[in-house]
Image (tube, rainbow, N blue to C red; front, side, top):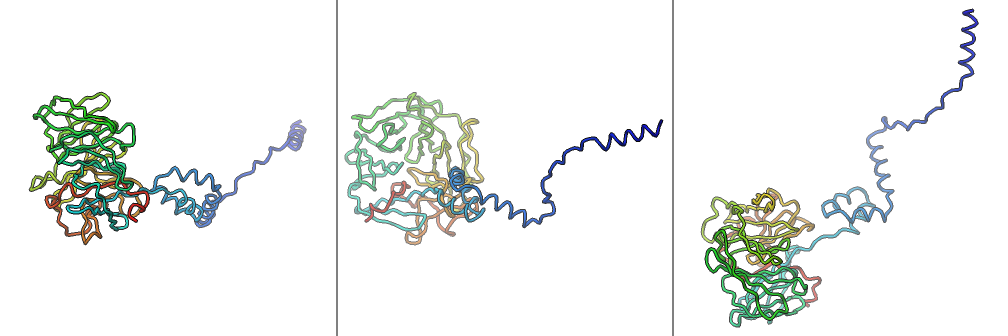
Length: 384
């Protein structure tokens, strides 16, 4: 009986269907690292050219440069879509005559052009390739484009010790010119004007904190607001839409220990970039201190790195740029040129030093109205 049962089980086992064989991926565990890298390289190089360009054009400059090292195909595609910002040029206002000089820090070259339209005027501000100027004798205030020589006049206004700024290029319908001066430590007079207006609008505002206007105050337009940093570090904010003025309860940026020396007020700069506000303190040969305004916590945060940003500092207005090629990233460029116009004084955050070395950084030597950073021209036709 037991024998018949065992024979039956063997017969069932022999006639039962077998399970299908599942194919397995080839085992590359034994492949060398060189072979694996070659396989990865081949797969990356097979990305369609149009798709690759669409991907690469979304990268910033730093990421674009890294991607260009993958292979020859990626290098060619990266270069074809690479967009790099131009640094602004440093414009030097003549003390005598009409010859104006423009210094390009990227190639260390100076260009000259005669601009008799500027005779008898004083620099006030620069933005979007336009200058804002003031003629003290006639109280004339006007915009001037040094590359096209276009002039846009504003109503007359007496500008003594207050600073002036504008929100956008005067060709924009949203352009607004702004100036503030103190009537008393707790009262300021704010004047605004649009291109095409026949007069300035002036209104007085009370301060909760003391705010004294000075030619050494700093002024930027950011996120629809004018920010004014006073001589003592208090931050006044004007909202053009709401027509309100407020001195914010933001502790002033901490100055370097040896900052309060001769001409200390001249070594302070402020710039705006993509909604962020930066303040730079310099003092003699000490390294600059850089702060960024934390809008949420209402404090100034000291910056240890610029994250690829380049700051261009001058007394009347400063600028900031990202995606600049070469060694200019993570640096501050000042409105001073040495070695007969061949070298702009700069400070490298990465290297923690000034270039060139052993230069004098006493800002008291420099006339605040003699130079200003301005957007580079689209071409060199203005200098032919």
